[in-house]
Image (cartoon, rainbow, N blue to C red; front, side):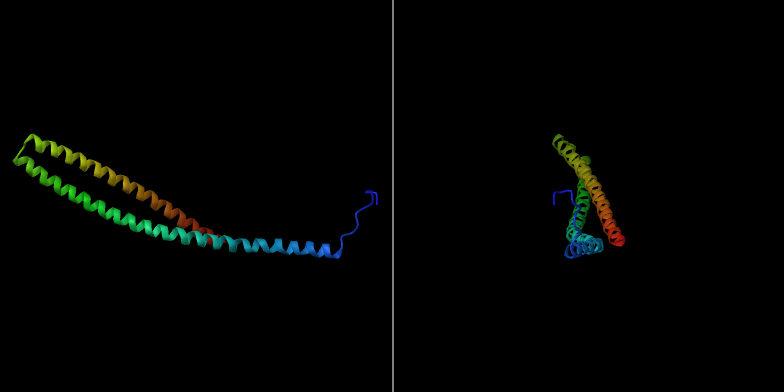
Length: 137
């Protein structure tokens, strides 16, 4: 054997090993959807709990913001009545301060609503993605 000889035929055990590799490769694509589905289920389980917790916190925050806005509006009405009865410079300063606080609260409320809409969109996309991924497999 000087290297120019043709290669010897593969032994039967080598052919069997190659056949086993082919069987494993053929089985791998069949197992792939099961793995993806299991992974999607695990991710959905982890994110599902976090999203439910977030939704509960967001709902509580929205209720709190509504209560705060109602209280600020009520106080603003009372302040207007006070200003009609006693327009002094100190009361005017406080009224200006309360009005600026009201504007900041309303701006914060709008920001929170915007954030909530974005999170709802992300939740919808994730839910749709998980559903379509499990349906495709």
